[in-house]
Image 1: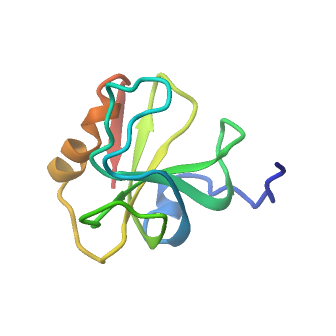
Image 2: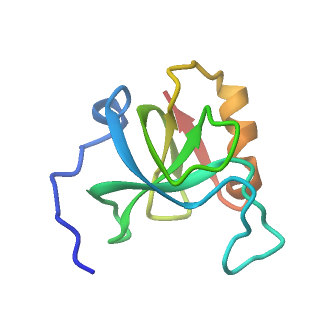
Length: 121
């Protein structure tokens, strides 16, 4: 599958606050395909048409849903910059709700605990 390449934003300052939409490929409650003991407590997917550093579409954690989703539209409220991986993860709020740093970090801890990084707002 070929992705339409669009200009990649230079950094978190250009990304945070933007509206994005995409698909959920790991809905809340699903298991990681390679690590079945890892269960997603939030919806995890990708932004359509934005290619990340790993050559795949940009991954996102989607907050604000109380159940599994198939697609999303929302606002990027933060970026989790991984230091020992090539791709940043975008944090998207679908309902306009604000989340504290602590709430975001707790929501993504299930997977990000395996990486070194920081939350950028």
